[in-house]
View 1 (cartoon, rainbow, N blue to C red):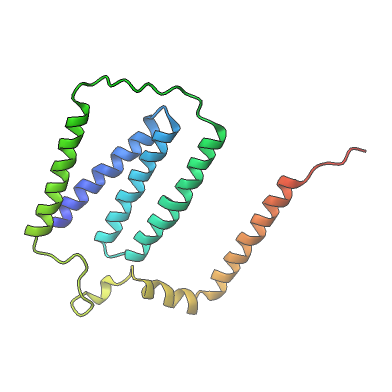
View 2: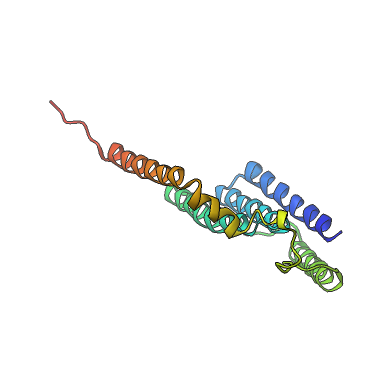
Length: 173
């Protein structure tokens, strides 16, 4: 029941963020919609016990990539005058009420729900450990170490090539 409620809430959050990415006229609002989508998907990963994937989702995508997007947006320049007049009279109290309801719902789920957020290792299903750090690291650094290192070398060469092409200037003859 709790998983269904979390799935419904985070699914709606991801969809709302995705619609915001596409429909927002201001690129900063689009980036914030992308952040909402990425964080909602990370919570869905946690519900599926894929904690490593959720951590990578938050650190790499919601952290680094989104920061890069915002830097590019600010570098390009969003030269729009922002209108700070509130057109909806009860917007702030309504948002505060909705936020309060979400907090109360989360607190009720936490207090009344009969579940563990992270089950102990002795109770956990061995087949459900596919998202742990150990389950990902052992095959990555034993069976797939050559492919992992080749990919790292390929990405390094590609980055160096992109920098060299960007810095290349034709000589005038």
